[in-house]
Length: 120
Image (cartoon, rainbow, N blue to C red; front, side, top):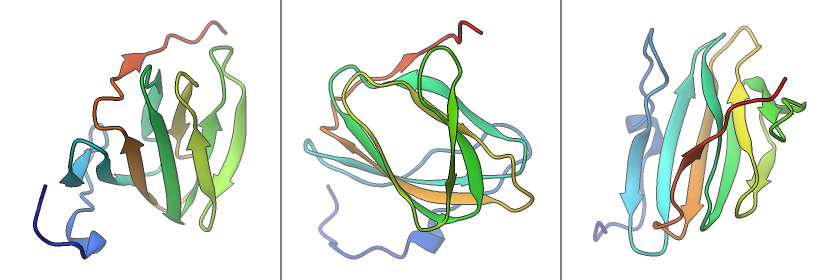
């Protein structure tokens, strides 16, 4: 973990034409903080964390947030805080016209990652 306790999140957001880039802001055994910058029509594929929670703070944009393996979604937008408890499917498709920008906090750092294939 960094000795710093204050971070300028803008320094971590990275735009790309391919898949969104996961930019780690800071990491400790307790938590991983990640900056996401998702261009229109880009997606974080549905997945789950079998051993922890993922909390998103949406700073800019909007998207369709995956709720389950059946592909059900709910709209999210700037100002929302979105929580995926341990083992819950989540991911997002940026269906807006501007970047979707948010901070993800996964805890604990050993939450794991498991891709989920939609059954739609």
